[in-house]
Length: 298
Image 1: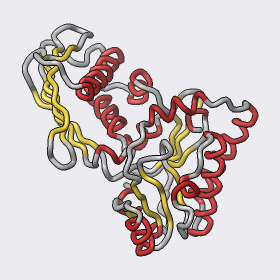
Image 2 (image 1 turned 30 degrees about the horizontal axis):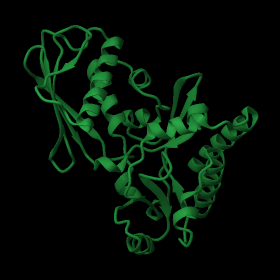
Image 3 (image 1 turned 90 degrees about the vertical axis):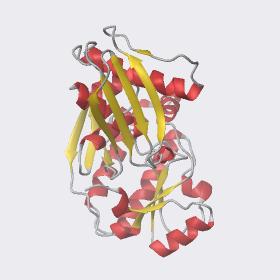
Image 4 (image 1 turned 60 degrees about the vertical axis):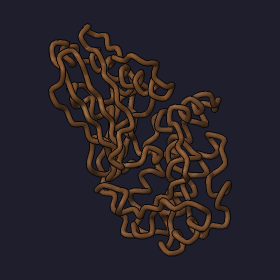
């Protein structure tokens, strides 16, 4: 709904991605991406000797996954060049190392943090770089660019950000549980755009979601917070025509559950006592359970 102008509460994660830049061979970029475990997961050398054209330097046919990563990286870099023609001087060379601080299947923004870092390096607008490279609302770019909670809104196709002091007194009862599978946000966006929703109905729902977002920031009790979670989940379920995750997988859970991001994967937000949450979800095979304090940066 943020894609259509709804306000959303967004909280930046403590886990991010760094980008380190050194001098390299003239006319080349040696790019190395490192996992949170310290192991490399992607290496590529790129030829930047021709202005506005970047090509991979390789003597072998890369695997499909590696080729996709290379093409994605080149697209981001070329779009950054279009926004700033002085970016990537062909007479210079660069060694780039990115270090991810979370497992790749967590879905915490490996793409958005990369785009934000490259935008900072290229001295360009990160939202323009996102929208020229991919699709999306840009809320994750806002999270990557700020160190506290915020309300994000697309107003006349421009990002509108209001920083908020969101530190629930009941945060010790809020947890993030990983569903052991990765969802592709771009696929979720494409699916949402194919849904035909009556314009008046959609405008009414956008207003509803925006009001709930503001209520989330004001509530001072866990009970009220859980009611807002349930209401928000019902509304989104109705608009995207998917079953809420609690109803689908965890109907006997004694607490509230809210889907996050593209439904059906990544993390869910759950509330309750820590001992019960860990017992319930670990019994069902979900072992990655992060307390609010460990996940959220504020």
